Length: 143
Image 1 (tube, rainbow, N blue to C red):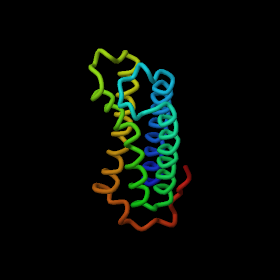
Image 2 (spheres, rainbow, N blue to C red):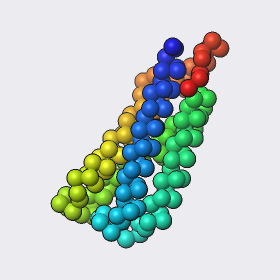
Image 3 (cartoon, helix red, strand yellow):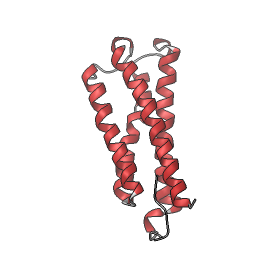
Image 4 (cartoon, rainbow, N blue to C red):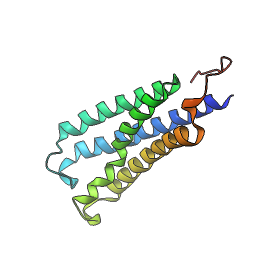
């Protein structure tokens, strides 16, 4: 297996992990909205709508990366990463004791999976500089 396919698989794993993590956290936040300290402008409908929109952006980012449209992919994945990076923002609206262990777990799992995606973007763009490479016609880009 060539490196490009390995990078695609790694990104796919990160995006899937983030989708699962955010789905669990956003569902919990939706169902127990009155228990989560958060700004008053966050409503139950805004929770699931933002998850749907941001997840679609993340999947689009993966697809763009897979087809080597790197800068658009990086942009979409960066926007998507805020789905989970923003989760620790709950702590601005309540003390640590306001949150159950379950809430802490969901918030930090979201934050960490999203940071991993952001890290992947920086690694791909700044270290690997994949956007500068010409595609190899013998590469197998299935994934």
